Each structure stands twice: as C-alpha cells, then as structure tokens.
Image 1 (tube, one colour):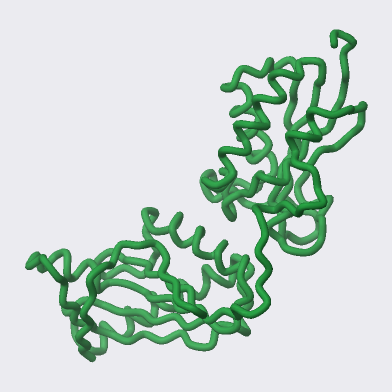
Image 2: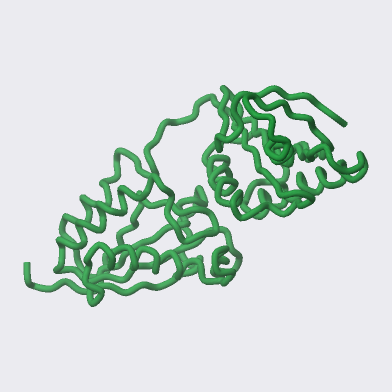
Length: 281
C-alpha cells in the first residue's frame, strides 16, 4: 500500500497538538528492533506519556518502497508490535493501546532533497499517536509543590543524624541511572550546598520503581539487575567531581523496598541519609 505524505519537518522528537502527543521511531533497513540511537528518544517520550493523562494510543508501522507488498506488510507490523512491547514493558497499560497496525509501504515526498536514501530512511518508521485529556491538567513544577521546601533549603537548615532527605528535584530516565536534562541544574545546586556543608556525612540511597517483591530493576546500559545501586553511584560520582570529599559519603542501592506510592516516577529517586555531623561548624 502506497501513500503520499507531504511534510516540511521530520526530525523533532515530539509533536504536540491540543490533545495529542506524537512521536516517530526510525528503523534500519529490514529491521524491526529499535536502534540504540532511537532508544533514548523513545524513553523520553514514554516519560511524557507517564506524566500525561493518556486516553488512547495508536501505533502505526511503515516501510520503504523496497520489498514485496506481503514482506512490507509483515515487516511494518513487526515494527509496530515491537513498539507496543516496549511501551508495555515501561508501564504503559495495554488497555489504552487501541491500534497496532502495520501499514506496509509508504511513499514520502521530502522538501529540498532528492537523495533517495534519505527518503527511504524516513519511510522506515513507526508513528505513535497518543490522545490525552487536556482538561483539568494541573500546572506543576518538577516534582515539587509550593508547600514543600526545596532540597537546597532543607540541606541548609538544621539536620540531625538519621534524617533522610529526598532529592525530589532529581528525576531519572526510565531504566537508566541518568537524571533527566531538566534535573541537572538542581543537581549542581545540591552538590554546591553539600560541598559547603562539610560538617555532614551521608549515605546516598538509590531507589527504583515497578518491580515485584522488592527486587532491583535492570540497568539497560549494563544489563544488570542493580539499577538502584547505579543511580546512587551516579550521584556519588557527580558529587565527587564537584569536589565533595569522598570520606564524607557512601552509596547504597535500596532496590524497591521503600515505594512512595502514587506516580511511579517519584520512586525512581535518590535520597541521602545523614550518618554523622561533626562539631566543626
């Protein structure tokens, strides 16, 4: 099946309309496994889905003009099925995925290019269309409410041994130990305060969401079931680079022993526990 689509822009990660969030995943020739170059973009899009009130998701697979109609229909369906599997494994409910359809071959007209390889590369794709509820969506800052003091202000205040401070401004990419780009500014501010407060010693505790029986989650970078440890070590290494004395801190993975409840993204977190306070100050 051939279609003609006119477009001026193809390389944005997300497309927004009044009630849709759209995303495109591109594939290699004759493949339906998501390439590594596309995985990070897809995971960021999944986080957008988790933050929204999604009503329905449609997934459409496509191929370039090479291959028979039957081959292209099968390959495009496999690509759509692969994306559905990734969404399901990242806590997107299958009940809201209403369409998973391989559309076969697609013809694409590109403005300002005659390179057939570029055209074919943009045809090997899956389009994800999520319908969201835009009514009564609260406006909120990154994991913080007006009633809660910031992590920086808590760290500057009075602390005692045993206190646990959730670094609530830090949100992690799903299945990885890295913080989201919008969390890096807060991480730098937290590190600066901890560097100045050289009277406190602490343990960095990593947490994960969405596993069973308090198990740890898999770190997709290393393929090991130690994601909570990896998140704690990521923060530890960052603090070390910022000049915090390593003798003042340790790191530990807490698996999923202490879920917060509510939105799973808040369980993908790091806390610090105060273990010692010197009398130097």
